[in-house]
Image 1 (cartoon, rainbow, N blue to C red):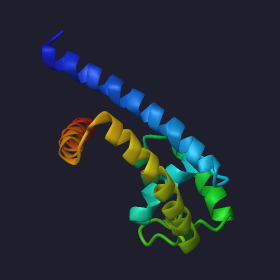
Image 2: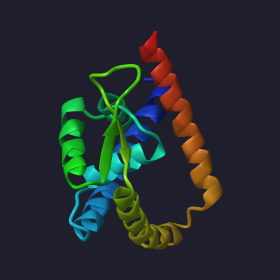
Image 3: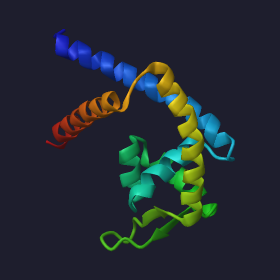
Image 4: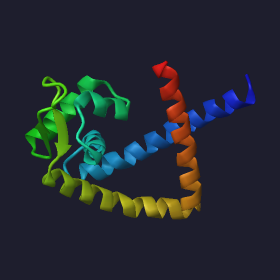
Length: 149
């Protein structure tokens, strides 16, 4: 195996491990507010812009059906709303309501305190995080471009 492929394989394994550990912490934080990490993730993705459920699922790397169940729950609680999609009347555009933004604000504030503590303990700074993110974004775009062809 080439050194590049091995380094990539190990990076992906570390990303999965980091995501799992982060998800466990997020689940605990969300639970204190009567929600789940899945609801938090869907709210977060939809807070940037209105999307169809399928588009939100793609962003999250999840099956559309599982995201649809979470969206239905959040619509029922008033944290999301749906508006007609001018390009596809069967797939409404879903977005975050004021109540949903308030919940996100509370969740992010609570998790920020814990994440600052964790980052301080690791000694990882902004520059390192930005470099890591830029690398990951290049890899994401490369994989996205490769699967589109």
